[in-house]
Image (tube, rainbow, N blue to C red):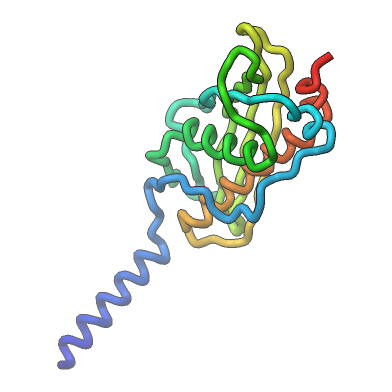
Length: 193
């Protein structure tokens, strides 16, 4: 009986120490912790009216093998098996649809393109999410309008938690989209000359 209790105690202590100092090597991306979709500015609402939007697949312009998460003062980095460009394309399309945009194809569709320049979280007392995306409206292979938007998220914690990493990433990306659809120049570009 005593041996069983000692074994159980040793197992618990071992697991606790692993979970306390254990850092995952990789985690899948999940959309987490975003309370609501961003609201477009009146100019963007007017610009979206009467348009159908086609969102081209995002292009990931980050350097190859860029970590999705890092820990300050620690050489350890984390990757994700998730296709970051496909993840961002889906979330952007969902957020734009929730903001009132209608999706579709065809020669009259507004053709939106995006390049991911930064998408990561840095942990060190806080979970600091950072995202940066270059957007453009294209027609016939030519850019009619473009802009670069940043998003940041800061949440307290230091537990090496994939859930917290995903929350920081999701909120920083949602802020990128909010900054885009609040931008008057984007609304004017949608409205046309």
